[in-house]
Length: 354
Image (cartoon, rainbow, N blue to C red; front, side, top):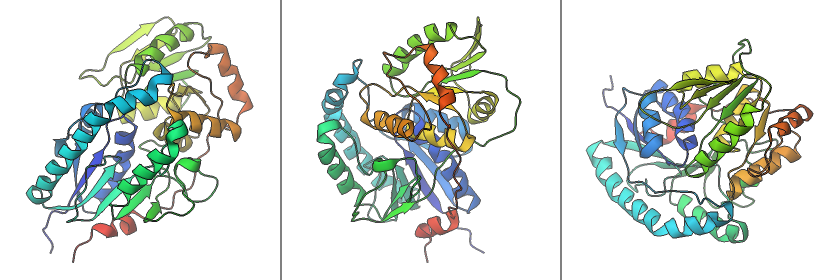
């Protein structure tokens, strides 16, 4: 009888909460396959996983200090200015993880876009939907740098499908990769449920500041002009949940996975950012949606354009959005679920020790 605790470190990037929430199904799958997940992150990503898994050991990593520019056109420069702090955090991460490998007798690492969470001593997985990192005219450079980092890991897991149709398009697909890629299918913590409709519109905010707050102000004013029942989830992770009724709108500062799943299923239409995790969630839920990409974030702009072109979901720029835009949704098909045939047992085979 084997009594060893097979510890696997799961470390999502704290950039919005998408990286954290898409790790939820992976953490659950590890538990079901007799591994013991240990969670490591910082900020809101760590807070959300602590709420979700109060029984799991959670460790703190240094923050990449990601902030968005107020003006979308300055997005890239803000990120460049932030580079020294980010590199500093990555180097610190490496030192910390080196200690943890020994201290917690780690069997493996799953890093969701955390570049320094890596060890040569144990099997390491890098999870990302961005094999190509879009940054406008510097995309080739940022993509090459990102791929060079991914190469150090034993495997790269892409939460998408290899063939068409897929969700990530050119973000998650390379013509001639020189490292090991496994397409693990779309991931979501949410399931489709046959619930009666309670809301005509669900507004779902997410992503780093100050853009989250700017969109909140914008959509608050627009939602007041909406003819129907609105549930408005601000995406602010705070210690206590606050619920406020104002006119036709019910406000929540945040919801846990269970509440979100229920509310998504009770809503006819979703208005949100075009972040990749959100897109995966909406496809699991078979939802009609309208997107407002984060200004200046090339990845979200690319995904919104891709899905519009495929006739699935319309979008508008943040400064152009009016509540009347939602009438366009009826002309689009909405996101459909994919069949996911991922075998976790096979994937986790990488962490089996003799």
